[in-house]
Image 1: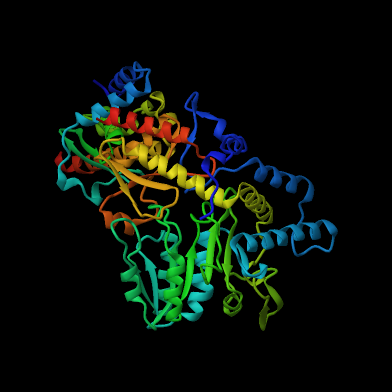
Image 2 (image 1 turned 90 degrees about the vertical axis):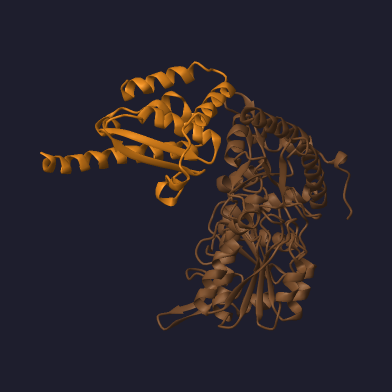
Length: 147
Length: 413
């Protein structure tokens, strides 16, 4: 499934829940279902700046695809982290950098979350795209050597 | 304490004076505003007075030869006289207009601190000070070589008076202490603090940001040397606050900022400064806001500050009692003498989650560290949630808040 397809799927699933409490329950459940985040990575190096509650993010490149781990100390934010990770998980760096990522608006999250929280979500997406850019640049500089 | 019974408090009439309390958020949920410690809402009397001033009376103060400016100046100085009475000051010259408590503290730390502190001197703050009453003094101590010391608090959130008294010595030059804690609600015993401080010849600065909105203030009865408060927390506009200082102390202080109308004569060889309070009011002041603050003080006095205090206590008691219905409720700040601020956590739920869910129910509270990192360190929590009240808060607001906390519990359970 492509990044765009995963994004569409999440938007469809969550927007089917019209009652805000049901949507929040679903968001919280996604956070709880996430893989545990290793304690070693819960440090300043993995902290995403611009979040009201603390958010940690770890990214690596595995077989040319992004492998992402994330966490937050607040449950709703952890659920949002899970959604962001689900969208970007397994994407190629190219895809992560160039895809049209609009699920925050389509889920109405920018209206329903406080501005600081929505900014935090955008900070996290920017951070993942930055990793994508870095991984792409690293691949470009190392590939001539490999040839 | 002579207080009216809360039953005679005209809460419905008061609420009608605050149009914002009638609005809805999130497509039709009525607003419940429980963040008055951050900033209070404004009654019509304040907004309308400022509008009238802008539309019909607006002209610069202390600079004009024309009657419109003289009228504006008379209003500006009239509010100074009113503020002197409101705070219990001896004379209007003891009232300096500032932007708020933050600027007031910076003014004192600069104009008094950097002039009079020297190496070996000690400044005492308490653990429960807001960052705005810590950082300016740290900066002044860095420059002068004076030592900053912290008086400890008790688990109840009350000041440890034995610890405080033991810290006082002839080197103590100044104590800067919060009157009502913004994160705990504790009302500190200022009169006791000033008596002990004055015995060793130290001055006392009182941060009145949270007390001026809730309690009758008498700076002479508490014998404060300086007292600072912010207009926007006491039903007034943003950008204006009051600094009270004993006149002989203000006279000894250097100016804070240089500019127009704070001088007697300027040459490139030197400048002679105005007497207080004008020495500290460089540039064109926020005089429309001064007029608005005057209307806010009048509004509070019309309700009666003893009545506001009694109502605040009534809402505080009601809220604290009802919150105990919620399992896992833990309060931060359980002082016997408290004002209308309740800090709490619910089990392991992150305050950010509490705030986010309450917001969906139309309820505004504050979550975070409240500019009180030393207090968060003391309790070893990264953040707390805080509900705080104004003279317009009613029991229905509290009932909605409790319902909201049950929703939090339901969703996070």
